[in-house]
Image (cartoon, rainbow, N blue to C red; front, side, top):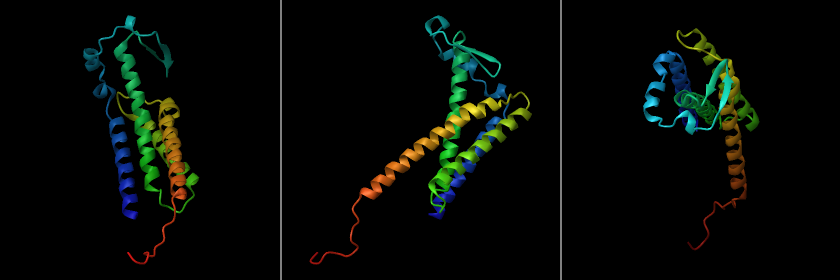
Amino acid sequence: MKTRCMVWLLLAIGCMFIIYHTSGTSYSQQDIKPAMEKYISRTAAQLPSIHFSYDHENVSTEQPSVFTHFILRKAGHVTEYAILTFFMMMSIRFSNYPFVLRICASCTAAFLFAWVDEWHRLIVPDRLGSFLDVYTFDLVGIVLCAVFYSMLHVVVQKRDTSLPVQNEEEPEGI
């Protein structure tokens, strides 16, 4: 069991390294809008009219590649922090701490890492950091993971308690 926990912990550390490394690259190195313009054939007239402001930036379907790029980047935040939280939960699942404490510890660690990572983005040249990302998209990924992990835990607990206990003794005559 200890080896499996170490594997999950190494996966969590690897995930943190990847997140930290990608947040250390400049925005211009990560910008995929020019490539997306080649593949997005929809025009603004063909899309529903969606307009909103996010962190002092206007986001709109009037520029389909910019809108899609925004959605993909924010979906990436949700996904990467859900995965990180899952790896953290799995790394401590066999500890003696109560289930709720393990969930809270994993979520808190992932949230603190998101906060530190966003601060890191503030000091990287040609990169904008926004703590709004931490309190929205990163937190959504963390909470979604916690909810699904808890639901899975309940299902597994019910399944395990409903299984009949087998005798360890072999029946005679077999």
